[in-house]
Length: 193
Image (spheres, rainbow, N blue to C red):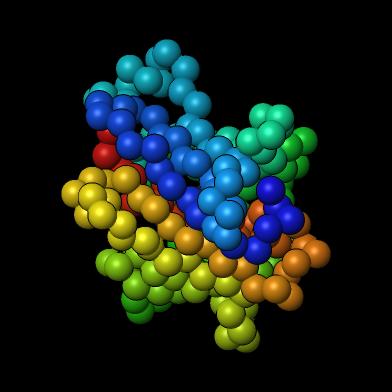
């Protein structure tokens, strides 16, 4: 999956759900290449009916479609205020994290496992269109919300994630940017339930 440069990330729509699932597709061929799933145990599932997602711990596991092998995990611990969202590889090693940054218009930083700022996510939080920019302002990729047909009538998100060709041979960079795109919607927008 991380060999691709463009992804279509499509939320699976379901009524009365308390966990989230996304299909990850090759944006060119529309072939499914992965899935991102929030895994909840019985107690966590019950608590979702009374505790808002913004205060609860969130863990999203991303799997390859072909063999269901784990690619990476996104985890935000329970808490209030500015929260750090961690990204772990399949071996549970920290690959990087996201942290809200105080700025005019809102942004958050994407940090690598050395605590170095790798990129900032900037954009239009209302339209849900974002750019991944290096600290010196070079664009590494972007996330654009797609509005197909009845998508306007649901909360189901559909996004196109494009990663710059300069990162073609950098799977960790692609992992962090794809995880950031998922985190934008799952961790920051899906706050109810």
